Length: 290
Image (cartoon, rainbow, N blue to C red):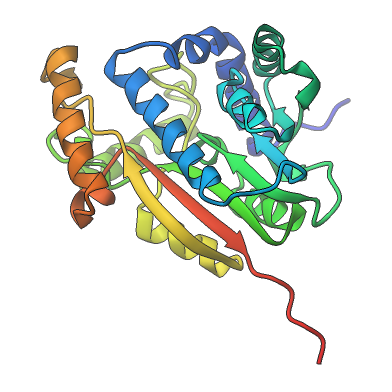
């Protein structure tokens, strides 16, 4: 008889099922001009700006964790890098390979399934590691982060994103206002553990995912031995009230664009309250032996 699955195994199964069934959603989102598509496209653009600013040689070894539909993978490949791309969901790996074939860059990409909690690469292997939209779905953030750091070369670079617990969109909606949301989460968790509420409802009640404040996230990275070089947030919308959108997509996009301008101009409040928080960090170099 097989041993019962751990909570981590069950959560990973739910995450895999979500992304296997929603794979085409992520493929289409990066092409859409609605507010969600614009925010994810902006997240990718900022991550690429961080990468471009590093002026890495084409011989740099690059690992992308959570390759999704392959848009970031292709963008990195167009810069001349040879990419190792992994995702826990097979459907996402298939989309990445399909996208690479369509763009004629399949020879620059090696994509396969993989687990960020147990990376199958040797220590100190990569000059650059990119993980967009991965952190919220992890069942063990500390273990995953230690694996990222293990396979990064000393002096190597890491681009990460996380879902921002301090996002501006939560402040206007009583349903998502942080103190209220915390109480709702605790009640829901107790009901789930008592078997009175299912933990799986497609998309709206997705598998458990985590959010961090920028301050908390930066501290976790620094405590793990990374140095944060740059950070910002992107995405201001959609704004809701009791879960209902306040603005049409066209108006919401204009609001997002104006608030994003403030964030990009350096206004501290807006730089830390976008829905997606993006960090460029580096792994500290090994100390020289005296």
